[in-house]
Length: 128
Length: 177
Image (tube, rainbow over all chains, first blue to last red; front, side, top):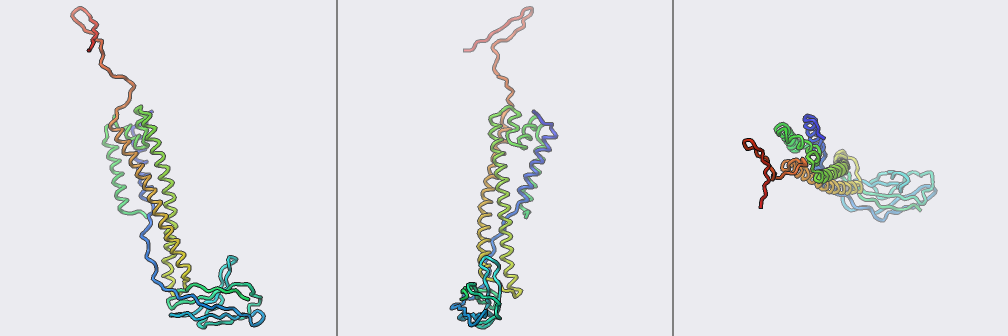
């Protein structure tokens, strides 16, 4: 079986061109970036939740050493939903407005945020 | 992302193919061009079917492997680029005064590292198939250029000849010791 001269010639050129496009158009991973130069504050300790009355809860923790801009209090979703930011405070204790429901068994977390805006790891406690 | 260096190299290869296709003598061009199309086709045309099968199989396996690894490699690079974009965006968020959780940054950095390493490994695997394909094509072309067409004829020196002498015709048989 012999292909005609022009068909074989152009077929070979087409195959070469396709190979060129495949290899020349392929992506390439760029150089790996350096890690961001940020420092996170330490995790608050002695995080305690008390229930003085009804659906009102008080959250207290020990201050973190080092520069801290403020603290954040979360209600954790634990896979059922996203974590909800309840309050931000510069103090080491907070009593948010009454929830309107019993928070018994729910998990809360508190974290420290640095002056740069970097939030450290969260301390978790369960409401009584 | 297409690199200028790669484009120049591939453009040079394309020009070489053009020049070779135009400059090669017509008698040899058919087999050579068929082999450029797919290794083994030129050998098949010349009657060397065993070599044709060998080169054809090697080329097909290399092409399929190259295609598969290239798809995986491209996917890994895309994933890595996405993770890198997210990670570098954290610095922009901090510069804008937004709060960024250290846990998210660490998780993204770990994912980015994992994606980069996977892309590196898949690039090496892809390059192996590129090398195999290049070797197959090179050996195939060398074989085409060095091998004569198999016409099926058996060449041997005849030991019987006919001689014409004046008015007589002689049949001569030559025996060599």
